[in-house]
Length: 138
Image 1 (cartoon, rainbow, N blue to C red):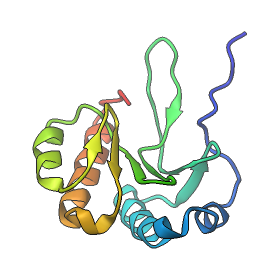
Image 2: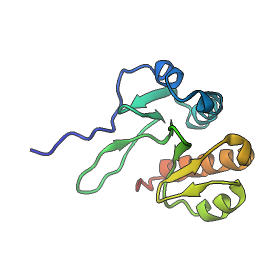
Image 3: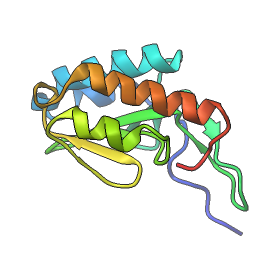
Image 4: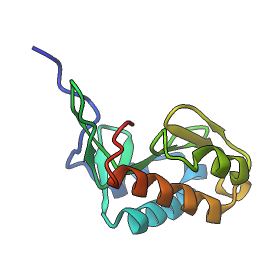
C-alpha cells in the first residue's frame, strides 16, 4: 500500500503557524499571505506541517495528488514561495524579481525588501493562471 502524501490540507491554524515562525519573517509572511490569498481567491490553509497554501489542483498523471495552487513557507533563513515550475513567463519574471534564488518550483527570498513586489504579484498571477488553464506539473 502506498504511503499517504505528507503535504495535504490540514485543520491546523495558519495564524498559529505564522505566529510561531521566526520573528524576522512574520511581517513578510503577512504580506505574502494577503497577496497570495487575493490572487488565488482562496483563504490560507495549512498543507502539511509547514506550507501555507491557497486553493488547490490535482497533478494528474499516474500518481495524482492534490497540491496548493500557490503557497509559501516562512523558514528560518528565508521565505520559500511555491509556484508552477513551467509557466512561460517564469524565467523572464524571475530575472526582474530582485535578490532571490530558485529551484524547480520554489523561489527563495530572504526579505521582501530585496525584491520587487509588483513582479512577485506578476509571478503569482502567471503561475495561478497557467495552472488553472490545465497545466498541472508542480
